Length: 132
Image 1 (spheres, one colour):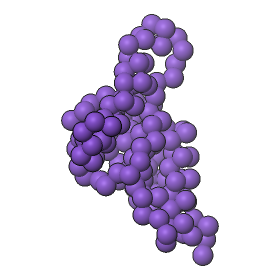
Image 2 (tube, rainbow, N blue to C red):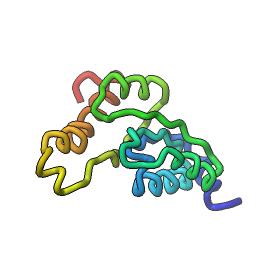
Image 3 (cartoon, rainbow, N blue to C red):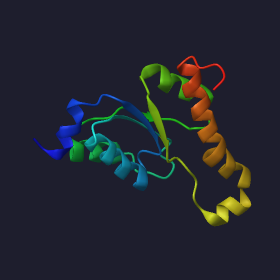
């Protein structure tokens, strides 16, 4: 049995991975799958190649669901949470350009901070947690 298959037998948890098609996200996705998790990739592909999920599937032997979603869009996130039994969120969807962050601070706050809070809120909503 390969190391990649060993964790799958005991674990069935689902992780929502935002930014899952980016450089760090794609490596995290492979590691999560290797550890036995099911991964749902959420990415707006503004800074990632469209074929990354296919390459992840080639490496891991597993196809993960992919949603082209802006993490600041509550309705899109609700649809993702409704479609998958998410147990955890790993938030790697972020804007990272220093010059742009100085000229567009609100956009960076929305993606990097507000996006995280919105994901938590939508997960709690999907799980029926009214006041975490």
